[in-house]
Amino acid sequence: MTAHQRAAVAALTALAPVSWGTTYVVTTEFLPPERPLFTALVRALPAGLLLLAVARVLPRGAWWWKAAALGALNIGAFFPLLFLSAYRLPGGLAAVVGSAGPLLVLGLSALLLGRRPALRDVLAGAVAAFGVSMVVLKAAGALDALGVTAAFTATASMSAGTVLTQKWGRPEGVGPLALTGWQLTAGGLVIAPLAFLLEGAPPALDAGAAGGYAYLALVNTAIAYCLWFRGVGRLTATQATLLGPLSPLTAAVLGWAVLGESLTALQLLGTALAFGATVAGQLPRRTASPTARLRAGSQPSGSTSGCVNRTGLPRERA
Image 1 (spheres, one colour):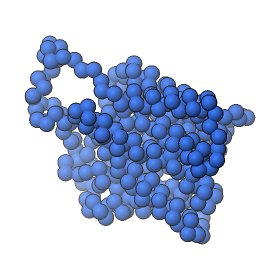
Image 2 (spheres, rainbow, N blue to C red; image 1 turned 120 degrees about the horizontal axis):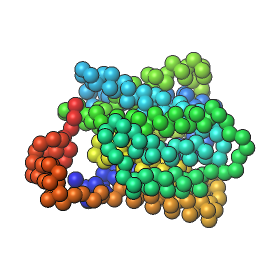
Image 3 (spheres, rainbow, N blue to C red; image 1 turned 180 degrees about the horizontal axis):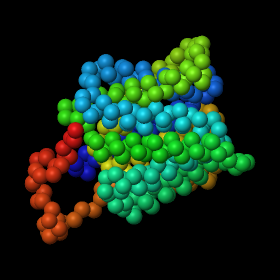
């Protein structure tokens, strides 16, 4: 990809965490309280079934278990654990733990993809996490051990799913719409029995709640996750995950603009740090010169060997 193409992909992918940052306002203003699993189910399963109906493509062969694994990691485990941590942790601590995702992705990329973490990416991830903590973290009493565990496990689950999504790519002829539908449906099927077992029958919904759930399912989930998985397939896993801090930053800005919450100078500084780290994480990497690549035994740029085709874009992997 050229620098302009990469920037366009990053900008579209960034719309996903920005959309996820609206979840808090929608949940607190429109949805019935104390129904985190039902909310997770309504976000995942209808969106997944809708995308399956549009794409009209089902997994084949090994992709049945791959789609189930990705759906369990990115949706089925992530959604309930995220809501559990949000209910049990004060002052945005769940968002702070979640902002460690880029650092987890760096470690998992080294383990599963064989990519050594670059110092710049490590620094960007650390600065982003520090900036988010300045924005959302507030003084609190004793920490809830279950909440912290849930937040960290949710972050680790999504990080592993992001890295495996890039490692496995997509089957030939399958687009991000179908891949997203597979994962949302699989994740929703994981959540469904938990929601009905632990929370009982669905709550009565007024017009505001119905509209809120429709927004979460269509915009916040179906469209947002299509953009996210499309971006994960084109960016590096680290670049994609470094867009994650845009979610708590969006939530903070909406809390100020919609809910009347205040933003202190410290929070504004944290916003600038986190946003700057996010942008820095998208800058193109320095590549070796053609002479250096030839000395290292690499193929010339015009070669079609490996995972690069004549257009210079990565080939899709089954």
